[in-house]
Image (tube, rainbow over all chains, first blue to last red; front, side):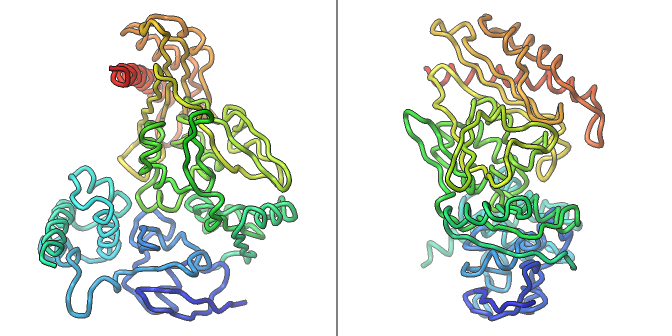
Length: 161
Length: 295
């Protein structure tokens, strides 16, 4: 039996039919059609499904969709402003921190949440903040560089405003 | 994926929550963060008929400090909130540290300490610190509430003192005396998203002479079916002069009371060795913290 609920994703309201056992990752990808959020392990270990709910990073594969009605959900698609990439996205590109790209949306959202809380993180804080996002391609070094670079880009952006 | 159908209930007040629990006790499962529960549901280890989501009950969220009672943390408070709380950093820094080890950033923004405690894993991060602090839990139901020292909460492997219709409502940590500190140490296979192979939290309170131990607590995890205190070791250490010999003795005594087993994460022998080392280091660190506090 499906119920119609409203999900607020990237500042837009989506009216979607859902079942009680539906997880947020599946509704975002299959019902709403935003496939930027990836499904990796499906049990909360890899972080590929990371989205922001009310600004906090969560695992959408372990979030029942009914739990997030009325909350503000942000997926990777919600970062860029039209053609202009978000500084975190730009930083990942600048530093070559993307290979297959599968971990990238989750990494970028975790980075966004980290920099919101700690605008100028140490390497240790970066590693601690991204510990929930696994990458099988890069070996993490460039990702860590990208986070530091993103912090710089955000600082410059803030100063230019 | 297909899951056995369940009813989803989302009370927005404690009153509604307690009412639902009273009528559905036994067949309804409480969903706090979901980072343990929903994994079990996805893996079909459990198939609850009804799930009560307590994620949006404001009365169950919050961290507060009272000079008399101490630190109160309500059950629905996210682990990330405990990790980042300035109040916890000041009043129970070992708890903030232990909370920071749980899972990952994402997991900490979903999970609750109540879930960590009620899920009953012997290697959970927060129980040893709560035991070392001599914390109390408030267990509530519709129309009633009782308090229990947390050392009475875990009865057997994954079995808690919660009765049907009851839920864990709040944690209270009594104020730390000026001459006391708690320290937490752990060992895992990697730096995050792992289950500790051994962990330990110690409480050290110095007597007025600042040289002898007035009170000692040693709380060990992953070396038994439940997190528990090494009470024989505690008795042997109380009253002794706190020095290098004390720290070493503490390690050996803790090791003697550890009931370690071989499993996929470590051998019993390694666990026992690690408990000895971590306990020794934890006491040294606690003593250092007391010295710093009282400079």
